[in-house]
View 1 (tube, rainbow, N blue to C red):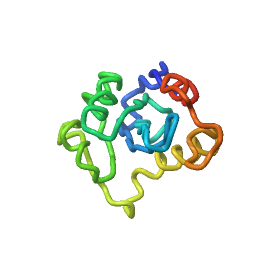
View 2 (view 1 turned 120 degrees about the horizontal axis):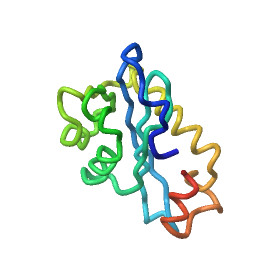
View 3 (view 1 turned 90 degrees about the vertical axis):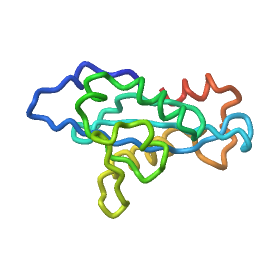
View 4 (view 1 turned 180 degrees about the vertical axis):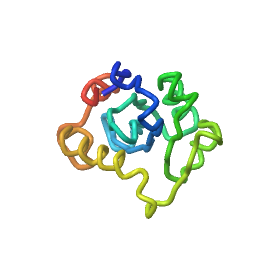
Length: 140
């Protein structure tokens, strides 16, 4: 995960749509909460990039900066109603949707799969990360 593969530079026949969501995890102790902010292409489903940080607007900005310029300029992003997205993703590119609309189900499924495959992301585990760099490395 991380970095934009060359396959993401798509033809005009593929829709420019993305999904973004956040999930929390812990580093060293439960009081040290880290949020993982992945963004993926909605149709072809590769993860464009991710950011690990807190749950504030600055972390959402960091994720937005990491996305390929063509996506920041052309893609429509579907997110939940978390308020920080509205201040980061331009209004003409952002669609905050309800769960029933099912337009973020791929990114939510990805987050669940990530938790299943990377044991240190599970809330009650002995395999937690002791350092943030190790945590990011396990996700990558």
